[in-house]
Image: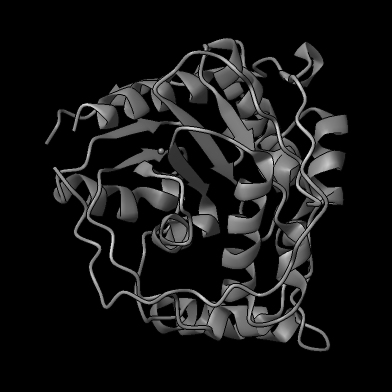
Length: 293
């Protein structure tokens, strides 16, 4: 089954963000954050009907390298524990750091350009599967289109789905847009952790050191990002969805209705950081299923 994410193909404008060659290092075991909860979240499998570049390149035998793309509002620390858990399962992983591109408009085009540069600079070989968390999800088709390296599948990890030609504002509740506008200063939204009460994030990531690292990487993203039309790029390859939190039940349901392979955890939006093993298992299962389509 293939994705129904069609539109007029547009070659993205790659803003020049060239970097020194990306370093490649083995992921140290200390980067693998153990599960916080005593009992892992319940996984439910739905029948067939989730630089400078901080790059982790794990050279193991596998059909495709998993490229982890963090939310525009967060940084690689939000996915680094998941990268370690995937590596422990024998999955080759590439973790990118795209933060520098989100501090000025046009954010979408800057992200696409730096993504392509970072993958090229990593010297990764072979086929790729792109995994986009949260706000990175709508850009996955454009990311794939910007690469010369073959992409065999897209996985949306607790993420919005592509909406070609439409902005976040077009589909968001009016009161939510008004709230974000009211708390923005000089055209910049506050860092993501300041959108919530402090106890909300600490409940999701009890590890104080890890939470400090995640918060320290957050960017002040231009409010204009929410008004930018998303890229109009065709994608006809396989897609999958891994839901982590209740907030993303609607796009999860849409993915399931499209016939995509899907998985779901009863967890939270930052489970890839605080409970990476629980996320890595269904994600690996999903990637394996995509490879057979």
